[in-house]
Image (cartoon, rainbow, N blue to C red; front, side, top):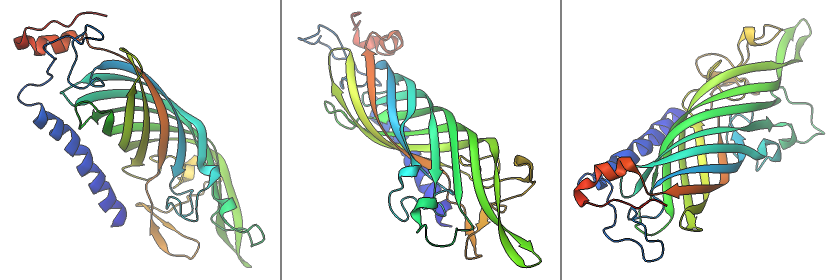
Length: 301
């Protein structure tokens, strides 16, 4: 299955980063320079950006999933109603685990929304599968930033996360059988769900001072499953998640599209583009103990 194949590819890439980081640092782990910088007088890892640090980030989030025209991202073009400007704000902590790698622990809070109505001509009869939702999300995550070059700020990121989605409102249409045939009905409500996710990203960092750096990052997050109570957009919907006791979206990861065909759910997710400000330091006691064979004691800032 196509969706399952995509998940396997993402998991393979995700597992590659920590293994590669460990392989590159297997002999010496984190190596501190033997001479202090002429500019700052401080010892550091080989790459300026590989260090302990704390970060704040603000991002724009673009949703893709079942509420986006059968769940295919950008199918029918860019949809402004799927974009949440300033939709994400995260706080993270970085810990070096090699000369080229940071372990990143992060907590994200933000908003997601989608509305597929404007993708179609308003003069046409209303679609039977119109979908709209708006939610608040909270997400803890852990991942690895890999800097392939010694002095450059380019990095790859891979991580895993657990997202809680508080759907403030959802609005779905469905077709109900009546004596005269079928008629369109509407289901509205609120709900809550969890979703485990995989994260893959690409970023670039710039040095602002001896302690500050600025990064731009493009991150793709995709859920590893899409079922009732485990999604971002309330679709598929269980009977006891709405007052009308209507179950929408089918079961076992499938749903019936507007042509009456069974389709596999495209797992929910979002594209995330943001800017990160990081305060970092190199006086890491844990790192100093690991590397005491160098007989180097980094000076404190």
